[in-house]
Image 1 (spheres, rainbow, N blue to C red):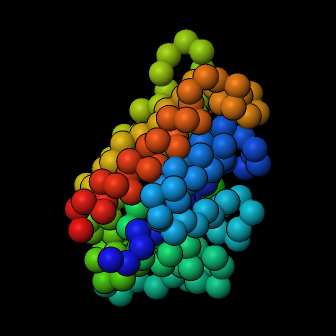
Image 2 (cartoon, protein in one colour):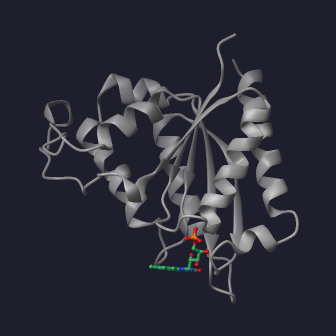
Length: 193
Ligand SMILES: Cc1cc2nc3c(=O)[nH]c(=O)nc-3n(C[C@H](O)[C@H](O)[C@H](O)COP(=O)(O)O)c2cc1C
């Protein structure tokens, strides 16, 4: 059986931040089950907002195809599991991740994207700083919607209330949970093939 591949889209600009630490732990867990993993730290890549697109999906072109967006989207579409990792930023995903998501619209009907994402496993990792209420739904719900749109399989999430840099590393059990969920996601996708 070919290896399960996992692509993580890390949308926080903070190296060593909560999102990246949980993503790394998730990927460690996935590797422990034999998966081949790849992490894209989007803030350090050249991914611009989408440019103008035409109204006819099939005729659309990516007028900014000279940056890194298409390469990341192709890696994502080729993966068995895609991890959408983003802090909650102003009641949504970070701009770094949103730019990449929007760029899909230039390839909306492309078979490599549609067929690649169909049946793929999707997982969410998010951190939010507000102490008063759970803000994680601002990241989780859009990703669930995107998963349905692609006919992908929503595998679950890790959502943690943490504001300070690297705080999740001091919170008992969080990184262990991320490792366990990474391993479990790979086992689930293996069973489904
Ligand atoms: C630009 C910006 C917007 C934010 N917006 C929210 C928000 O809407 N709700 C919330 O609970 N926390 C918000 N936060 C707090 C972050 O979600 C929180 O600090 C998180 O741990 C950052 O993740 P990171 O360490 O991976 O960068 C915001 C932080 C920044 C810098």
